[in-house]
Image (cartoon, rainbow, N blue to C red):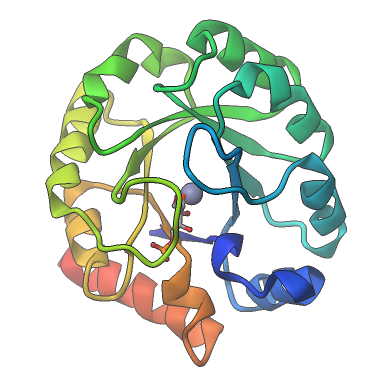
Length: 216
Ligand code: DX5
Ligand code: ZN
């Protein structure tokens, strides 16, 4: 299981320190939650902040766009150093065009569904996607409760395309990661579970161990 700590739960007044802390704690990817105040009822940061964080680690930047117009802003995030760009099936942009723009910019395209959206909405694009993100909370805020019912979506995706990377995001802790692992999830985003733990390296190790144990 790969772990992608979400910078949403970091101390925003010390972003470079927080990125370095994740880098040395064994994070696989760095998850960056971008919110526009329209797609979700919260605001975070845009391309300049992503670019400012970029020099502090070589780990992949996994940019999760919770915005209405991913097609319009994807080029700016690519320029800022995004490696994986995830946009939502519920956004206003054309999925085919958005996927093409992300690929043309040299990054890996991924799509996500909110809890209320059937995952089948993404099926027509699976062959063009690097990853699918199944939201396990209503997007917008960290620290919410994991929705176990979403594991059915993970199973459907893996049945449809076994080699597709599947990520989950929201409410991942040592108690919930077992369900994700058993459903076939490859990458877990963890915000509060890593950043608010007394020792981030230990938290990441514990998450990986709990996922591993669930597969035995
Ligand atoms: C929610 C974000 C998540 C969030 C996860 O909209 O996409 O990445 O930060 O936070 P936790 O792990 O605290 O649920
Ligand atoms: Zn996210």
